[in-house]
Figure 1 (tube, rainbow, N blue to C red):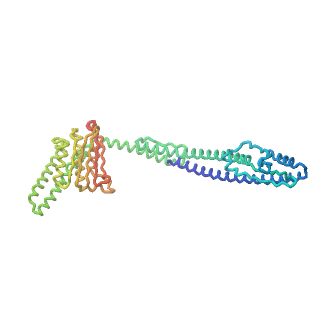
Figure 2 (cartoon, rainbow, N blue to C red):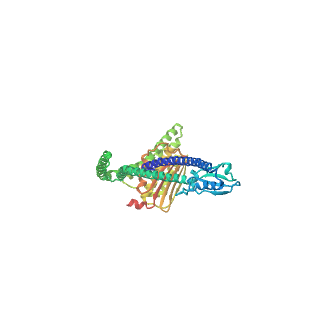
Figure 3 (cartoon, rainbow, N blue to C red):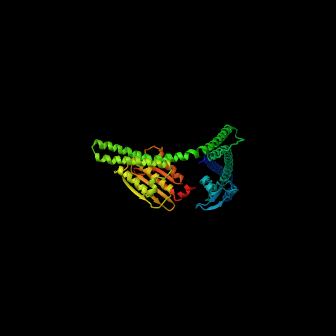
Length: 444
């Protein structure tokens, strides 16, 4: 949730809580007022009836006197008088004054409460077997309370709406410079260094405006200088030196490691007097040195590796696997390569990915099995090299030159490379996806 919306919601919550508290207080006040008024009306009614009965007791006609008492209550706001026979049947009842604007029944049930009823004892001379009953009716009083509640809530609602509108308007004006600043930073991040801020009415942000505009101007100057430098340097050095460095690392480094491993084995064989094994390892060293010499000549002449030209992608990978099997017989290799042809550049990139992945796994992960898969699908090539070694070290995020070289090679033809520890299993999975139109990308 945005900061502006969060503030509006917080203020609205406070106002709603205040509204609920006001509603509870209004309800309590209305209930108390109605009940007090009904009790007072009942007391006054008893006194009025008692006075009328006492004054009219000497009259000879009790029924006429009682009828006049009942009629005196016609049009009363809160009391209804009734005359009942001994069986409880109503013989006569006064008419209440109807409320001009009745309250809703739900509100009446909440506020009106139960009706109060009292029986008036008649003197013996008026006791003709009838009973005089007074009963309260709160409809008019509840209607007045309903009018007060409507007025109060209308006033509060208008007040709350005005407060929210004022707060929203103030926040919108206060946050507008921040939104413009965020937009300006996004445009700067997209490379539009001509972006400038102009806040005429935000005097408190003049320093921010001046600092941003100064930063944008300096970035524009630096970008122009950087573009000129890239034009001069990039075409001359980066392509040639980067390609040459990647080739040397990809091809020479594994054989240097092999020479080191064979030399270490020769020392072990000398100590154990295993002279027959020394000749084989010495030939391995000579073979590795010869391969490195050939590759150095290839780099200098800018030619593709002979192994790819002679054997193709599948044969080159098989030769690479055989090379490592001869030096690490304890590792099980599983190889699956599609026979579909590729252009020389794409084949070289796939070969380098497999070569670097195998070299890293053998040298750093100590695996017992490595699976190599190069598969062709409808629109892409998928390369998977998965080992069950020690995996990547936790917290180690830096990449060596070989891995960076792989990423650059794959990205150059529009592919993607991912190197990560296997989920739920030991080892590392190297996965690359190359488009089938790689030759077109390279040619363009």
